[in-house]
Length: 193
Image (cartoon, rainbow, N blue to C red; front, side):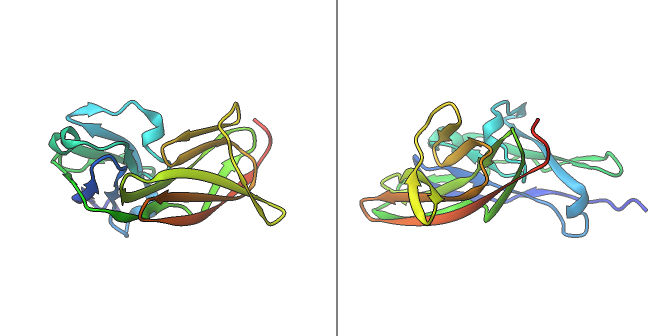
């Protein structure tokens, strides 16, 4: 039985210069069968792969007033029926100035799974004023070891893109008003690709 579903993108408030996180809200009764396949900004497909996460969230980095004027739309596909459903296209970001505010992590994952030999994206997006500084650590024998960019690691604002090394990773964000942290466990499985 084919059951129609609609998807929505709700308005998000974001502090200028921070990372906005837009989510495609899929009804619970079809969620396990539906995947976010694309995001459109002003009716054009978004091409920057690192902004769309496998879980469907869209990260818009270094938000400014122009981002608030754009129209956002998510596109989904039902994996059993092949049906494609898009959200209405509308303005979804309210960008505001802010007073000093301690950073608060607004998007992360407790666990990320990846295939051996492939890179994995560990999201970490925070809101704060001034704009928070991000730093990633890996727990090694109980010690937090700072991660430095290199051939196996890339940091895009808060998002860590790593060639898969299983373990516990910590995203640390701070500014002059305070700090916040979150841990993500990276699980690696399967044969090396």
